[in-house]
Image (tube, rainbow, N blue to C red):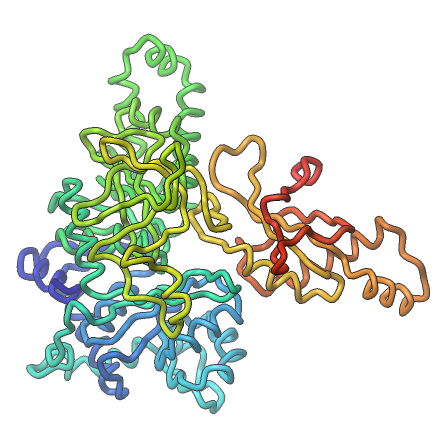
Amino acid sequence: MTIKEWLARSVARRGDGVALRHKKGGRWQSLTYRELLTRAWGVAELLARRGLKPGDRVAIFRENAPDWPEMYFGITGLGLAAVPVDAKLQEQEVAHILRDSGARLLFADARSYPLLKEIETQLPGLQAALLVGGRDLGPPPSRRVRYEDYREALESAAAAAAADGRAYDRHSPAEGDIASFIYTSGTTGRQKGAMLTHGNFAANVEAILHAIEIRADDNFLLVLPLHHAFAFTANLLTPVAAGCEISFVESLKTVGENTREVSPTVLIGVPLLIEKMYNRIWAGLRENKAAWALYRLGLRRLVRRGIAARLGGKLRLIVTGGAPCDPDVLVNFSNLGFPILEGYGMTETAPVLTLNPPGGPRPGTVGRPLPGVEIRIQDPNPEGIGEITARGPNVMKGYYNNPEATAAAFRDGWFLTGDLGRLDADGYVTITGRKKSLIVNREGKNIYPEEVEHAVSKSPFVRECLALGFRDPEVKVGEQVGIIVVPNQEEIDAHARRGHRTLSEAEAVELVRRDVKRVCAGIAEYKRPRRIQVRWEEFGKTSTGKVKRYLYALRAEDLA
């Protein structure tokens, strides 16, 4: 199967059924599967008119919006590769992805125009940018990149898209064709583009549909950003393949309100979202003396009914992934009548590898491998703990334009996850740590220390640095970024001489910290160090000059 075939099948089965719902002007609007396909036809047509051919790359630099799916299905239906880009990335991060992928065309919001204008000279392959709301910009200055309004481009292609012989129908991507380049941070400080095929996604979706029951009348609440592999597969491709509804929240601030309005049956979330919901529910329960008394007496049916009503009244399944979830939250949520299934995966595996089975979840584990997925523990120690490796039809082709990173990611056909864990006799996987130095925050975002270090090292006052994950004492899961820096005393002395003064140690430390914050403004907000520790001794190193990371941690006073 291909992504195009999944959509076609759902159109044939439920053409008039609701595919997408979103709120506009205070009212919920809906789009049927047939209308979604029609819009994908229009996207494919406008791309073909601009000379794009199968295999070319088209980027989607856009936050969640009802036009995001039509863009994606139009791109991939024409045999092109989509390049989803995090809308919160900084200029140089966006520039790297667009340049590395060789994107020829870009879909974006008009609000991104100032950023694109700054980086377009770095993008020799980018020919055009179609902006949602671009009409309001007026005629942009004459530049090498052609800026157009997205709606006007669709309107100009509408007649051809509706006729026989439309561009969308002239191409049929194969399972082995690349559907997406999804960029994940690299250990050299640069993001790597995982090449994921139609077959990779189709295999993962099919495995998910075998692992858990998805009903035709299910309504998935879409909260997570679609550029994220977890949200893309679990919250877009899976419901589309099953012919379900997808309801877009307006924003993170309106999740509660939108949940009550659309009554979802399935919620996909990272632990941060799940824990916020959990804390609100328990706080409300304890504040309601009657409900709390009923709960403590074991009379929980009425309590559950009230909580269910606040969640729309129909929620039957919650799936969490992207980062570790507190087992206590999983257990207590389930005790309230809301089953939560925790899973595990990687961008490079399209992405789901394991999932707790509905009939036998084991909180504290990430479940069993999905059908068709093999998990093996590489080089286990006496406790059975080793690197988690995976093999299956969902594993990527490799990293685009990066054969060295691709070779390093595989051993004898097995993908090396970089995570440490064990596999029990019943096939459940428990993650115990990370072989790589990857930092995973509470939102499930992956942060490689080397990327942060690359940014911090641009400060002239920093001789060397070490980025580490840390967790505040009251937080059970997820990490934030901290940085230990060794100052460049010579540059600090030169700075002091230019100011005709002598700096105290405290002033020098403040100078270093201030400059670290300055240089980190160029990376995404969630990657910026939340704690900065200054040490005056160089780091201990191996004989090859590599810092011995395991020797260092942020001091307790820096976590205060």
